[in-house]
Amino acid sequence: MRIISVFVSAFLLFSTALAIDSGEKFKDPELQARYEKIISEVRCLKCQNQTIKDSAAFLAGDLRVEIRRMLMEGMTDQQVFDFLVQRYGEFALYKPRKEGKTLLLWLAPALLFLIGALAIGFTLKRRMALPIDQDAPEEQS
Picture 1 (cartoon, helix red, strand yellow):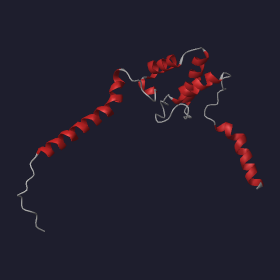
Picture 2 (cartoon, helix red, strand yellow):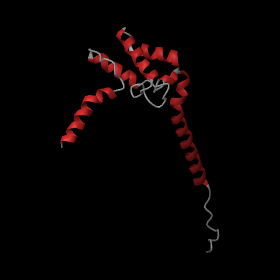
Picture 3 (cartoon, helix red, strand yellow):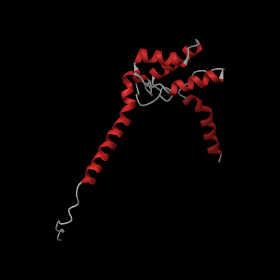
Picture 4 (cartoon, helix red, strand yellow):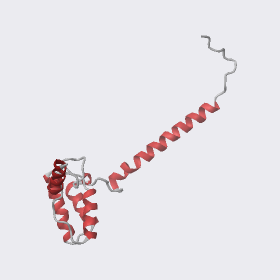
C-alpha cells in the first residue's frame, strides 16, 4: 500500500512536467477558453495528424506562443485564423473554411451521395418497367 501511495504522489507531482502546453494560463477565463479553442482547431504542421494543443513538436510550441501573443495584443479569433492561413495556408486549419477552393471539399460528399441515389433510382425504375418473362423455362438442377 505504501508503494502505491508513493507512485500516486509522484505521478501527481510530476504530471505537470508532462503537460504539452507549459505556458502560463490567462488570468481571464474567457481569454483562456478562446486560446484553448484556437489551439484545438489548428493543425500541427509537422505532425499533420494532431492539433497544436496535442503536439509536442517545437513548431507547435512556437505556434502556441505566437497565438498567445496575438490574443494578448487583442486580436480576434478570426484575425488569428487569418494570420495562420496567410502564413501557412488553409492546411493549417483542422476544419477548412467553407469558401473558395475548399467549398468543393465540403460539398463533394453530398454531391456523390446524390449522384449515387439518382443512379440507383433510375436503375430501379428502368428494371421495374421491364416485362416479366413468365414463359421462360425454369432452371433445372
